[in-house]
Length: 188
Image (cartoon, rainbow, N blue to C red; front, top):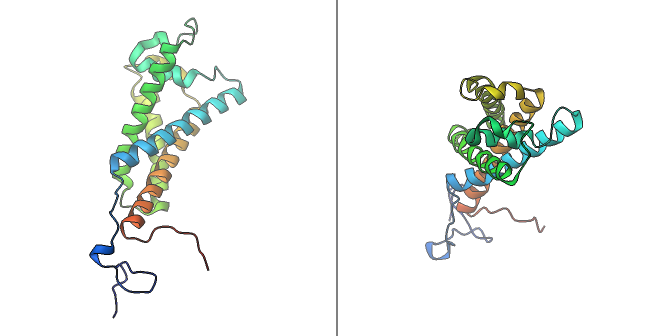
């Protein structure tokens, strides 16, 4: 008895019957985007904070202040304002909300692409986000012009690349689980 290459088979080479098929669990696009957005957002903030600290060009909390300024206005980025819990909380809320929404959009764009192509597209996506944030939105948030830096460019590249890598990795894993070719350690 022959089977098609896409048809799942048992270890003996026989096709799996409907009653033998385990229940499928699919990761939704939103689920992947939330997970990938949180990971990418965390890497973005961590890289930017580390670069700012290493370069000595500002306060390591500046990225969160900038995110908080979306909702709180320029008082969140004012040096005379202490870095308080409300600035931290609003900054994190805005940062992760945007990270997830951007990853949803990125996921729609890269969903059908091969990993290598998806990474190239996501690097461009990260750079596009930098341009939109630091040049396109200056009319609404004029203080962001002062935050333009190579460190922010690197952070946006890290965001795009890591969001795509995590999203694509989850996509491949979920597809493999759906087709019963789950990743198992080689026992031979």
